[in-house]
Figure 1 (cartoon, rainbow over the protein chains, first blue to last red):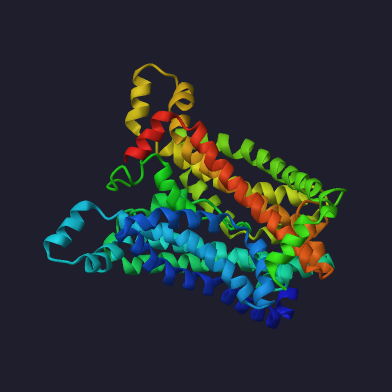
Figure 2: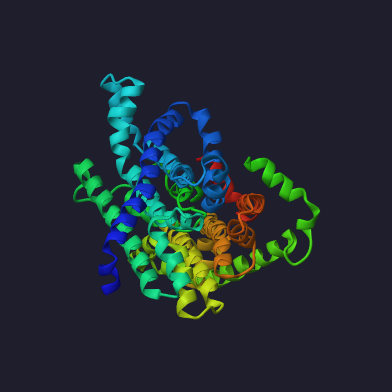
Length: 253
Length: 225
């Protein structure tokens, strides 16, 4: 602990840069994923090619992408932000699509009956109802991104990952513990914030098990690797389950 | 410099295709690390997931492991175990196996849990034992999800095994760590290309596998819905 206190300035500085590198990609991701998801639901033929693309992004190891980008962006923050943005997209787009599609038929019919146009129906009815599933995806993307930034340290841009390589070179485990604990705490903190955001955005869910969220948080696989893979899962899981989850009629769960 | 021409030049140069630092040798080492870590994870995670799913218990444990696993930075774990164990084999095996367990566990558990209650009740009514229900009903129905879990683990481990080179091991990560240390970008570029191709190959292989081994009836059902 005394080491951490003596180095508090450096820790604070690395913490901020870590957050910047991890959260900018998630923000870019959600800003792009919502319109793309809406497009995939509106024009169904766009969904299969985009789904294939997201599973390719998902499989691309983030470290390898950092290395490819060095040739174009040099050793700048973008070298880490761009691959993590692709990763966030691969998690978020399937979740947005799943969320929008999970809205029960009667609700959609009610919107039509009230005279809502297609676009207005999507934005004012389906999108809010999709919030729990979209936030489940955001949680996966955010937590994985916070953990994946540290791999960037192998090219010298890794926020708190600095403590891993420096601790290894100095054979000093305290420093490595500090890095690990801070990264895990950051991840848990932002995960908690997103849970609060979901409660605030979906007051009607209070008191019942959050739709989608409960089962999905589970199904989603885990990440933290460089492969970065965590997410497609939420989505694939729904379908792969033999149509149990969604195809089966969206009503349960 | 351009990534693609550097990577291509490196890939087609014949000296990179033999010897102890050649691509085939490094690829083999890489697959060895990956395979061993995956086998250890498989032996732990699949039985545990099947048991918890069948008994419908332990959901909280599974969710906790899932969240924690996602938040844990592998590079940190690798260097920590390396420093603590003074460089034993555990320093790559433990983190890689730890990385592979959560996706397998979560998907196996969830896959079995999602099996329709009516289906297992019918099986029980027909006089199947609990073991038969698991083996003949729950596992086949949960197979797509179980495979998805294994695929996710495999992709992550293949990508992350690269990090093992940082603590002095072989595998494809050698090209990256050595190339960066010597400032030889073409080596880095070529190594990154091989790793990307390997990750995509693993993804493709498992997609094929899912088509081949998922029971025909289930596939039809999935298409119909």
